[in-house]
Length: 450
Ligand code: TXE
Image 1 (tube, rainbow, N blue to C red):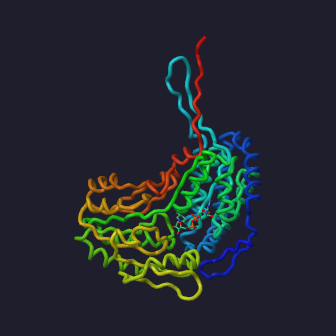
Image 2 (tube, rainbow, N blue to C red):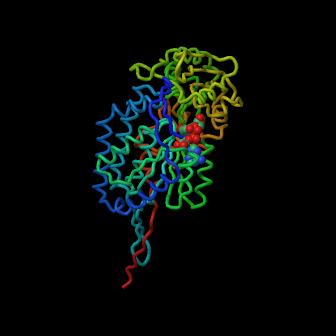
């Protein structure tokens, strides 16, 4: 059976690949294991230079990579260009981090004690289809910078950009075997990486359900795992906020990438005294989201990834809505921007929809807002909109979530840590924190006794 890759905006087949299986996975792990001693021995300055060269090649091929990603995921070309820019920045950042991630000297009696940051060995990276190359780069950057070799498994639906990146890595001079891409089914290739005795760590982004099975599978070999899982983040809007600004920004915090974003602020919590004014402005802003052909320069939202996924998203909208937008008819897995009024107990407010559907939920006061925002098994991101600085900080501390923005909905930056609380996973990506997840601390004591 071949791996059929579609353009979700047209439903056309854009590639047919021979899928990898367990045998190909084992071969890639063997190549990565063989490449490891030489790669970890590359002098830090030279490893940095190679990563910098990869970053530059990504910049040189930015338009090509953005078009691959836009066609394969259905994401608007303008957004895809932004993502590719971030990928280059991620490699530049970790190139700069190679020789700045060092150990400590610790005062002890009878000698000198110092620590090293050792690489782990072969790392398996399993990534999803919503931001295929972007999320891969968040793991690849720190993994390679620390001296690990990598087997990367892209999602079945979106393998094309990762395969192209592997070619660019070779062109950059990164040796064979240091970065291999194995495109095949999760339950075969992914599972094999998770259980493989020669894989030291799994960096995973995907559903909480598969994350749970990754954790179980990794237990057999006490593998390290970093898990970036689902989310159901709250966008908390207090009545004293700049309501027009909050409402103008809110649609893009849910409908960006057609809602297929683990950071989506898909629960919009609004203080009752500002509710009507906010909802009016929110409906107007949502009406203005430009939905259509991802290849058009001004498109803001494209289709969903697949017919199956669209059916799942549709199952969350079964009654009256506050607003339903327009979406192209005919071919393409389009779904309109949808606002529904909900309570936090409704299915649409409890489960990750992963589509352009936002639940709007009123609250009474600060305590009520915190209670509702935290009443979820997830804890990935969130926003707070208020003009009261003390309250902003109080609520930021009270929310059980890994990433929060105040008077903003952006939570992902190259230099700052990103990751979840609760069932959104653990471990941190991006920033210097990510290096901790791809290295092991070794402690050495050197006796100075004569
Ligand atoms: O994810 P999966 P799916 C959520 C979102 C979405 C739902 C399902 O709610 O609707 O998950 O998406 C690989 N062992 N997120 O089904 O299955 C798989 O091949 C090892 C949130 O696409 O978790 C792919 O490469 N690996 C999320 C990766 O896991 C396995 C992003 C993710 O796929 C495997 C994506 C197995 N047994 C979906 N089974 C986020 N955090 O942004 C599958 N895989």
